[in-house]
Amino acid sequence: MLATQNHKQILIVDRDVAAVEPLRQRLSESGFVVRAITDGAAATSALEERPPHLVIIDWNMPGLAALELIQSVRRARLPQVMRLIILSALAEEHDVVAGLNLGADDYIVKPFSLREAVARVAAIMRCRPSEEESATLACDELVLDAATNRVSARGRLLNLRGVEYRLLEFLMSHPGRTFNRNQLLTQVWGDDSEVDERTVDVNVQRLRRILTEPGYDAYVQTVRGFGYRFAPPSTAHSPSVASGTHTLGP
Image (tube, rainbow, N blue to C red):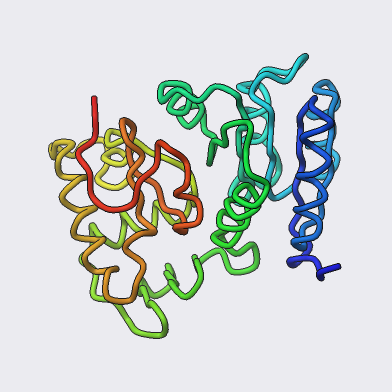
């Protein structure tokens, strides 16, 4: 049995016992503290009693709409560090985009590989903002220090312009979460900005070029038809996600 990964807690909410137990066991063996609930009505109270770091929910959970649980997660005591993954048998692109648009950090299609699911969970959890050092964001050896406005990769300082820094800071603050270009314009450039959506694409490309030499360019991912997100390459196995630069659909 592996030691727990800093006691990182995961709550699985899924009526499919046959799917839940193998996933719970594999995540536990990987060092996480895992609870599994098959009753949708008990999920909200479980969140209130002991908020986990990550919630994995079945999209079609009886007695509890996914949107309702997502809203409960976002209202919980630790919204800045809590993540959410949707499990669903719906595999069409518009279903995935709808799930991400609701506020989920990732979307895993059933049936899924246990090995891939655990890898994607671990990748998202690696990039959680530090609860003790809220001014520091870190993913592997890429570190953003908001107190000094410095970014380093593998111990070397990176030369980022202001907008590139703000873009990286916002994406790293929400690891695994996908944002469309309008959302990024509002969050990074501000409501009063007169720049257009293509400005986002240009600056994402510039940020990736800076991250290429230390090997972190693939962490800034394109979700086709939706937008961009920051996550380790391990989470890029979803059919709707690609690293590198692509033209976004409508």
